[in-house]
Length: 407
Image (cartoon, rainbow, N blue to C red; front, top):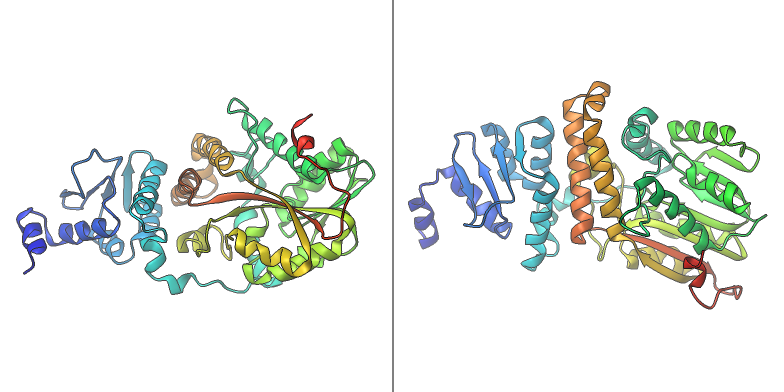
Protein backbone atom coordinates (compact mmCIF):
# COMPACT_ATOMS: atom_id res chain seq x y z
CA UNK A 1 0.00 0.00 0.00
CA UNK A 2 1.31 3.46 -0.93
CA UNK A 3 2.01 6.10 1.69
CA UNK A 4 -0.83 8.20 0.25
CA UNK A 5 -3.27 5.30 0.62
CA UNK A 6 -2.07 4.60 4.16
CA UNK A 7 -2.57 8.26 5.04
CA UNK A 8 -6.09 8.24 3.64
CA UNK A 9 -6.86 5.06 5.55
CA UNK A 10 -5.80 6.69 8.78
CA UNK A 11 -7.96 9.74 7.99
CA UNK A 12 -11.07 7.82 9.04
CA UNK A 13 -12.84 8.18 5.70
CA UNK A 14 -14.89 5.36 4.26
CA UNK A 15 -14.01 3.83 0.90
CA UNK A 16 -16.52 6.17 -0.74
CA UNK A 17 -15.01 9.11 1.13
CA UNK A 18 -11.51 8.18 -0.01
CA UNK A 19 -12.70 7.93 -3.61
CA UNK A 20 -14.25 11.37 -3.31
CA UNK A 21 -11.03 12.71 -1.82
CA UNK A 22 -9.22 11.38 -4.87
CA UNK A 23 -11.68 13.14 -7.15
CA UNK A 24 -11.20 16.43 -5.30
CA UNK A 25 -7.43 16.03 -5.73
CA UNK A 26 -7.94 15.61 -9.49
CA UNK A 27 -10.07 18.78 -9.44
CA UNK A 28 -7.17 20.65 -7.78
CA UNK A 29 -8.72 20.72 -4.29
CA UNK A 30 -11.63 23.15 -4.58
CA UNK A 31 -12.91 24.73 -1.37
CA UNK A 32 -16.04 22.59 -1.23
CA UNK A 33 -17.37 20.27 1.46
CA UNK A 34 -19.27 17.15 0.40
CA UNK A 35 -21.76 15.46 2.72
CA UNK A 36 -22.19 11.78 1.86
CA UNK A 37 -25.49 9.86 2.32
CA UNK A 38 -24.10 8.41 5.54
CA UNK A 39 -23.50 11.90 6.92
CA UNK A 40 -19.74 11.63 6.42
CA UNK A 41 -18.10 14.97 5.61
CA UNK A 42 -15.37 15.15 2.96
CA UNK A 43 -13.32 18.18 1.95
CA UNK A 44 -9.94 18.64 0.30
CA UNK A 45 -8.38 21.06 2.77
CA UNK A 46 -8.78 23.21 5.85
CA UNK A 47 -10.03 26.33 4.05
CA UNK A 48 -13.56 27.48 4.78
CA UNK A 49 -15.75 25.94 2.04
CA UNK A 50 -17.60 28.23 -0.36
CA UNK A 51 -20.53 25.79 -0.28
CA UNK A 52 -21.68 22.42 1.01
CA UNK A 53 -22.75 19.74 -1.47
CA UNK A 54 -25.06 17.12 0.02
CA UNK A 55 -25.28 13.81 -1.86
CA UNK A 56 -28.59 12.27 -0.80
CA UNK A 57 -28.24 8.66 -1.96
CA UNK A 58 -25.65 6.06 -2.93
CA UNK A 59 -26.71 5.98 -6.58
CA UNK A 60 -26.03 9.71 -7.01
CA UNK A 61 -22.64 9.30 -5.33
CA UNK A 62 -21.64 6.40 -7.59
CA UNK A 63 -22.63 8.33 -10.68
CA UNK A 64 -20.83 11.46 -9.49
CA UNK A 65 -17.59 9.54 -8.98
CA UNK A 66 -17.86 7.99 -12.46
CA UNK A 67 -18.68 11.15 -14.43
CA UNK A 68 -18.42 14.20 -12.13
CA UNK A 69 -19.31 17.13 -14.36
CA UNK A 70 -22.31 15.60 -16.12
CA UNK A 71 -23.64 13.68 -13.13
CA UNK A 72 -23.39 16.61 -10.75
CA UNK A 73 -25.74 18.48 -13.07
CA UNK A 74 -28.04 15.49 -13.52
CA UNK A 75 -28.10 14.81 -9.77
CA UNK A 76 -28.82 18.43 -8.91
CA UNK A 77 -31.64 18.56 -11.46
CA UNK A 78 -33.18 15.37 -10.10
CA UNK A 79 -32.95 16.58 -6.51
CA UNK A 80 -30.45 13.87 -5.55
CA UNK A 81 -27.78 16.50 -4.88
CA UNK A 82 -28.38 19.65 -2.84
CA UNK A 83 -26.19 22.74 -2.56
CA UNK A 84 -26.06 24.82 0.61
CA UNK A 85 -24.60 28.12 -0.59
CA UNK A 86 -24.57 30.19 -3.76
CA UNK A 87 -24.68 27.78 -6.68
CA UNK A 88 -22.90 30.18 -9.00
CA UNK A 89 -20.09 30.76 -6.48
CA UNK A 90 -19.68 26.99 -6.18
CA UNK A 91 -19.28 26.58 -9.94
CA UNK A 92 -16.97 29.58 -10.05
CA UNK A 93 -14.75 27.89 -7.45
CA UNK A 94 -14.34 24.85 -9.71
CA UNK A 95 -13.50 27.08 -12.69
CA UNK A 96 -11.00 29.20 -10.78
CA UNK A 97 -9.35 26.24 -9.08
CA UNK A 98 -8.85 24.55 -12.43
CA UNK A 99 -7.32 27.58 -14.14
CA UNK A 100 -5.14 28.62 -11.21
CA UNK A 101 -3.56 25.15 -11.20
CA UNK A 102 -2.76 25.24 -14.88
CA UNK A 103 -5.47 22.88 -16.07
CA UNK A 104 -7.00 25.15 -18.71
CA UNK A 105 -9.05 22.39 -20.33
CA UNK A 106 -10.18 20.78 -17.11
CA UNK A 107 -11.27 17.35 -16.06
CA UNK A 108 -14.63 17.70 -17.77
CA UNK A 109 -12.85 18.11 -21.09
CA UNK A 110 -10.90 14.91 -20.52
CA UNK A 111 -13.66 12.62 -19.25
CA UNK A 112 -15.94 11.32 -21.98
CA UNK A 113 -14.82 13.94 -24.51
CA UNK A 114 -15.87 11.70 -27.37
CA UNK A 115 -19.47 12.17 -26.27
CA UNK A 116 -19.21 15.92 -26.95
CA UNK A 117 -18.21 15.72 -30.59
CA UNK A 118 -20.09 18.20 -32.75
CA UNK A 119 -22.95 16.93 -34.86
CA UNK A 120 -23.99 18.41 -38.18
CA UNK A 121 -26.46 21.29 -37.93
CA UNK A 122 -28.78 20.64 -40.86
CA UNK A 123 -31.94 22.54 -41.66
CA UNK A 124 -33.95 19.83 -39.91
CA UNK A 125 -31.80 19.50 -36.80
CA UNK A 126 -31.49 23.28 -36.49
CA UNK A 127 -35.26 23.61 -36.29
CA UNK A 128 -35.45 20.87 -33.63
CA UNK A 129 -32.63 22.45 -31.60
CA UNK A 130 -34.20 25.90 -31.63
CA UNK A 131 -37.62 24.50 -30.76
CA UNK A 132 -36.12 22.67 -27.77
CA UNK A 133 -34.95 25.90 -26.15
CA UNK A 134 -36.74 28.92 -27.59
CA UNK A 135 -40.23 27.49 -28.01
CA UNK A 136 -40.70 26.76 -24.30
CA UNK A 137 -43.30 29.50 -24.46
CA UNK A 138 -43.27 33.28 -24.56
CA UNK A 139 -45.02 33.33 -21.19
CA UNK A 140 -42.08 31.50 -19.62
CA UNK A 141 -39.46 33.93 -20.87
CA UNK A 142 -41.64 36.93 -20.05
CA UNK A 143 -41.48 35.91 -16.38
CA UNK A 144 -37.78 36.69 -16.03
CA UNK A 145 -36.50 38.61 -19.06
CA UNK A 146 -36.78 42.39 -19.13
CA UNK A 147 -39.73 44.06 -20.95
CA UNK A 148 -37.79 44.13 -24.26
CA UNK A 149 -37.67 40.30 -24.18
CA UNK A 150 -33.97 40.45 -24.99
CA UNK A 151 -32.29 37.10 -24.40
CA UNK A 152 -28.73 38.20 -25.18
CA UNK A 153 -25.96 40.14 -23.46
CA UNK A 154 -26.91 43.68 -22.48
CA UNK A 155 -24.58 46.72 -22.63
CA UNK A 156 -24.06 48.52 -19.33
CA UNK A 157 -22.82 52.04 -19.93
CA UNK A 158 -22.82 52.20 -16.14
CA UNK A 159 -23.42 49.60 -13.44
CA UNK A 160 -26.37 51.65 -12.21
CA UNK A 161 -28.40 50.95 -15.35
CA UNK A 162 -31.46 48.74 -15.12
CA UNK A 163 -31.42 45.64 -17.27
CA UNK A 164 -34.07 47.08 -19.59
CA UNK A 165 -32.03 50.25 -20.14
CA UNK A 166 -28.89 48.18 -20.70
CA UNK A 167 -30.65 46.02 -23.29
CA UNK A 168 -31.82 49.12 -25.15
CA UNK A 169 -28.28 50.51 -24.90
CA UNK A 170 -27.01 47.28 -26.50
CA UNK A 171 -29.32 47.79 -29.46
CA UNK A 172 -28.06 51.32 -29.99
CA UNK A 173 -24.45 50.20 -29.56
CA UNK A 174 -25.00 47.72 -32.38
CA UNK A 175 -26.70 50.33 -34.55
CA UNK A 176 -23.85 52.81 -34.09
CA UNK A 177 -21.28 50.18 -35.01
CA UNK A 178 -23.21 49.51 -38.19
CA UNK A 179 -23.45 53.28 -38.87
CA UNK A 180 -27.04 52.95 -40.03
CA UNK A 181 -28.54 55.72 -42.15
CA UNK A 182 -32.19 56.45 -42.85
CA UNK A 183 -33.45 54.63 -45.91
CA UNK A 184 -30.93 51.78 -45.71
CA UNK A 185 -31.86 48.10 -45.66
CA UNK A 186 -30.90 45.60 -42.96
CA UNK A 187 -31.15 41.82 -42.78
CA UNK A 188 -31.07 40.12 -39.39
CA UNK A 189 -30.23 36.44 -38.94
CA UNK A 190 -31.85 35.05 -35.81
CA UNK A 191 -34.02 37.87 -34.50
CA UNK A 192 -35.32 36.52 -31.19
CA UNK A 193 -38.49 38.33 -30.21
CA UNK A 194 -37.74 41.08 -32.71
CA UNK A 195 -36.97 44.05 -30.49
CA UNK A 196 -33.65 44.88 -32.17
CA UNK A 197 -35.29 44.95 -35.61
CA UNK A 198 -38.08 47.19 -34.32
CA UNK A 199 -35.61 49.55 -32.64
CA UNK A 200 -33.53 49.87 -35.80
CA UNK A 201 -36.61 50.63 -37.91
CA UNK A 202 -38.11 53.11 -35.44
CA UNK A 203 -35.01 55.01 -34.35
CA UNK A 204 -32.77 54.81 -37.43
CA UNK A 205 -35.28 54.88 -40.28
CA UNK A 206 -34.14 51.63 -41.91
CA UNK A 207 -36.09 48.75 -43.39
CA UNK A 208 -35.46 45.34 -41.82
CA UNK A 209 -35.98 41.73 -42.87
CA UNK A 210 -35.53 39.49 -39.82
CA UNK A 211 -35.24 35.69 -39.98
CA UNK A 212 -35.98 33.18 -37.22
CA UNK A 213 -37.11 29.55 -37.06
CA UNK A 214 -38.73 29.83 -33.61
CA UNK A 215 -42.48 29.84 -34.13
CA UNK A 216 -43.16 31.32 -30.69
CA UNK A 217 -40.71 34.18 -31.14
CA UNK A 218 -41.85 35.08 -34.65
CA UNK A 219 -45.48 35.25 -33.52
CA UNK A 220 -44.53 37.63 -30.70
CA UNK A 221 -42.35 39.75 -32.99
CA UNK A 222 -45.07 40.16 -35.61
CA UNK A 223 -47.58 41.21 -32.98
CA UNK A 224 -45.11 43.74 -31.53
CA UNK A 225 -44.48 45.18 -35.01
CA UNK A 226 -48.19 45.61 -35.59
CA UNK A 227 -48.74 47.26 -32.22
CA UNK A 228 -45.83 49.64 -32.86
CA UNK A 229 -47.09 50.53 -36.33
CA UNK A 230 -43.86 49.24 -37.86
CA UNK A 231 -45.15 46.24 -39.77
CA UNK A 232 -44.68 48.16 -43.03
CA UNK A 233 -40.94 48.61 -42.31
CA UNK A 234 -40.07 45.33 -40.58
CA UNK A 235 -40.71 41.92 -42.11
CA UNK A 236 -40.38 38.94 -39.80
CA UNK A 237 -39.68 35.78 -41.77
CA UNK A 238 -40.11 32.34 -40.20
CA UNK A 239 -37.29 30.65 -42.03
CA UNK A 240 -33.71 29.48 -41.66
CA UNK A 241 -30.98 32.11 -42.08
CA UNK A 242 -29.51 29.99 -44.89
CA UNK A 243 -32.48 30.97 -47.04
CA UNK A 244 -31.73 34.71 -46.89
CA UNK A 245 -31.71 36.32 -50.35
CA UNK A 246 -31.16 39.84 -51.64
CA UNK A 247 -28.60 42.61 -51.03
CA UNK A 248 -28.54 44.84 -47.96
CA UNK A 249 -26.62 47.74 -46.47
CA UNK A 250 -26.17 45.86 -43.21
CA UNK A 251 -26.17 42.28 -41.95
CA UNK A 252 -26.62 41.70 -38.22
CA UNK A 253 -26.74 38.59 -36.08
CA UNK A 254 -27.04 38.82 -32.30
CA UNK A 255 -26.91 35.56 -30.35
CA UNK A 256 -27.39 33.16 -33.26
CA UNK A 257 -23.84 32.07 -34.16
CA UNK A 258 -23.79 29.72 -31.17
CA UNK A 259 -26.42 27.63 -33.01
CA UNK A 260 -24.85 27.66 -36.48
CA UNK A 261 -22.20 24.98 -36.01
CA UNK A 262 -18.53 25.65 -36.68
CA UNK A 263 -18.57 23.39 -39.74
CA UNK A 264 -21.12 25.77 -41.28
CA UNK A 265 -19.07 28.95 -40.79
CA UNK A 266 -17.70 29.12 -44.37
CA UNK A 267 -21.26 28.85 -45.70
CA UNK A 268 -22.37 31.62 -43.33
CA UNK A 269 -19.49 33.77 -44.56
CA UNK A 270 -20.55 33.30 -48.17
CA UNK A 271 -24.07 34.33 -47.21
CA UNK A 272 -22.84 37.47 -45.42
CA UNK A 273 -20.66 38.44 -48.39
CA UNK A 274 -23.36 37.98 -51.02
CA UNK A 275 -25.91 39.76 -48.82
CA UNK A 276 -23.86 42.96 -48.44
CA UNK A 277 -23.58 45.82 -50.89
CA UNK A 278 -20.09 47.05 -51.75
CA UNK A 279 -20.26 49.49 -48.81
CA UNK A 280 -22.23 47.16 -46.53
CA UNK A 281 -21.40 46.39 -42.93
CA UNK A 282 -21.88 43.17 -41.01
CA UNK A 283 -21.94 42.57 -37.25
CA UNK A 284 -21.91 39.24 -35.43
CA UNK A 285 -22.52 39.17 -31.68
CA UNK A 286 -21.79 35.79 -30.07
CA UNK A 287 -20.69 33.95 -26.98
CA UNK A 288 -17.09 32.86 -27.51
CA UNK A 289 -14.01 31.28 -26.00
CA UNK A 290 -10.34 32.19 -25.71
CA UNK A 291 -9.41 28.86 -27.29
CA UNK A 292 -11.31 26.03 -29.00
CA UNK A 293 -13.09 23.68 -26.57
CA UNK A 294 -16.30 21.64 -26.88
CA UNK A 295 -19.35 22.92 -25.06
CA UNK A 296 -20.18 21.17 -21.79
CA UNK A 297 -21.98 17.89 -22.51
CA UNK A 298 -24.82 18.56 -20.05
CA UNK A 299 -25.52 21.98 -21.57
CA UNK A 300 -25.60 20.44 -25.04
CA UNK A 301 -27.97 17.68 -23.91
CA UNK A 302 -30.34 19.51 -21.62
CA UNK A 303 -30.24 23.21 -22.57
CA UNK A 304 -28.74 23.97 -25.99
CA UNK A 305 -28.67 20.88 -28.22
CA UNK A 306 -26.37 21.37 -31.20
CA UNK A 307 -24.70 24.48 -29.80
CA UNK A 308 -21.01 25.25 -30.38
CA UNK A 309 -19.07 28.15 -28.87
CA UNK A 310 -16.25 29.49 -31.10
CA UNK A 311 -12.88 31.04 -30.49
CA UNK A 312 -11.90 34.07 -32.55
CA UNK A 313 -9.64 31.84 -34.61
CA UNK A 314 -12.60 29.60 -35.45
CA UNK A 315 -14.72 32.64 -36.31
CA UNK A 316 -12.08 33.66 -38.84
CA UNK A 317 -13.36 30.88 -41.13
CA UNK A 318 -16.44 33.07 -41.62
CA UNK A 319 -14.43 36.07 -42.77
CA UNK A 320 -11.11 35.09 -44.31
CA UNK A 321 -12.31 32.83 -47.18
CA UNK A 322 -14.84 35.48 -48.19
CA UNK A 323 -12.57 38.54 -48.16
CA UNK A 324 -14.49 40.20 -45.37
CA UNK A 325 -12.30 42.73 -43.57
CA UNK A 326 -12.55 42.79 -39.79
CA UNK A 327 -13.03 46.40 -38.67
CA UNK A 328 -13.61 46.00 -34.96
CA UNK A 329 -13.62 43.33 -32.26
CA UNK A 330 -15.04 44.06 -28.81
CA UNK A 331 -15.30 41.70 -25.85
CA UNK A 332 -18.29 42.35 -23.57
CA UNK A 333 -17.64 39.45 -21.18
CA UNK A 334 -18.40 41.28 -17.93
CA UNK A 335 -21.53 42.79 -19.45
CA UNK A 336 -22.88 39.26 -19.84
CA UNK A 337 -21.99 38.40 -16.24
CA UNK A 338 -24.02 41.43 -15.12
CA UNK A 339 -26.89 40.48 -17.45
CA UNK A 340 -27.02 36.98 -16.03
CA UNK A 341 -27.18 38.23 -12.46
CA UNK A 342 -30.34 40.14 -13.36
CA UNK A 343 -31.79 37.05 -15.05
CA UNK A 344 -30.92 34.82 -12.10
CA UNK A 345 -32.64 37.14 -9.65
CA UNK A 346 -35.76 37.44 -11.80
CA UNK A 347 -35.88 33.70 -12.40
CA UNK A 348 -35.71 32.97 -8.68
CA UNK A 349 -38.46 35.50 -8.09
CA UNK A 350 -40.64 33.63 -10.58
CA UNK A 351 -39.65 30.07 -9.60
CA UNK A 352 -43.07 29.14 -8.24
CA UNK A 353 -44.74 30.19 -11.48
CA UNK A 354 -42.09 28.32 -13.48
CA UNK A 355 -42.71 25.19 -11.40
CA UNK A 356 -46.43 25.46 -12.14
CA UNK A 357 -45.68 25.69 -15.87
CA UNK A 358 -43.21 22.78 -15.84
CA UNK A 359 -42.03 21.10 -12.60
CA UNK A 360 -39.48 21.42 -9.80
CA UNK A 361 -36.81 19.54 -11.78
CA UNK A 362 -37.13 22.09 -14.59
CA UNK A 363 -36.63 24.90 -12.07
CA UNK A 364 -33.47 23.26 -10.75
CA UNK A 365 -32.19 22.61 -14.29
CA UNK A 366 -32.57 26.22 -15.36
CA UNK A 367 -31.25 27.52 -12.04
CA UNK A 368 -28.10 25.48 -12.63
CA UNK A 369 -27.81 26.68 -16.23
CA UNK A 370 -28.12 30.36 -15.31
CA UNK A 371 -25.80 30.04 -12.30
CA UNK A 372 -23.19 28.19 -14.34
CA UNK A 373 -23.34 30.73 -17.15
CA UNK A 374 -22.81 33.61 -14.72
CA UNK A 375 -19.79 31.80 -13.26
CA UNK A 376 -18.40 31.12 -16.72
CA UNK A 377 -18.43 34.78 -17.69
CA UNK A 378 -17.05 35.98 -14.36
CA UNK A 379 -14.10 33.62 -14.58
CA UNK A 380 -13.36 34.04 -18.29
CA UNK A 381 -14.49 30.52 -19.16
CA UNK A 382 -16.73 32.26 -21.70
CA UNK A 383 -16.33 35.49 -23.65
CA UNK A 384 -18.78 37.70 -25.54
CA UNK A 385 -17.53 38.92 -28.92
CA UNK A 386 -18.92 41.56 -31.23
CA UNK A 387 -17.14 41.47 -34.58
CA UNK A 388 -17.72 44.13 -37.24
CA UNK A 389 -16.84 43.37 -40.88
CA UNK A 390 -17.14 44.86 -44.35
CA UNK A 391 -16.21 43.88 -47.93
CA UNK A 392 -12.47 44.30 -48.47
CA UNK A 393 -12.72 47.20 -50.94
CA UNK A 394 -15.06 49.39 -48.89
CA UNK A 395 -13.41 52.77 -48.22
CA UNK A 396 -16.52 54.40 -46.80
CA UNK A 397 -15.18 54.00 -43.29
CA UNK A 398 -14.84 56.27 -40.25
CA UNK A 399 -11.30 57.18 -39.24
CA UNK A 400 -12.00 56.89 -35.51
CA UNK A 401 -14.43 55.26 -33.09
CA UNK A 402 -15.92 58.54 -31.94
CA UNK A 403 -19.26 57.68 -33.53
CA UNK A 404 -19.67 54.85 -31.02
CA UNK A 405 -19.63 57.11 -27.98
CA UNK A 406 -20.52 60.67 -29.00
CA UNK A 407 -24.30 60.60 -28.78
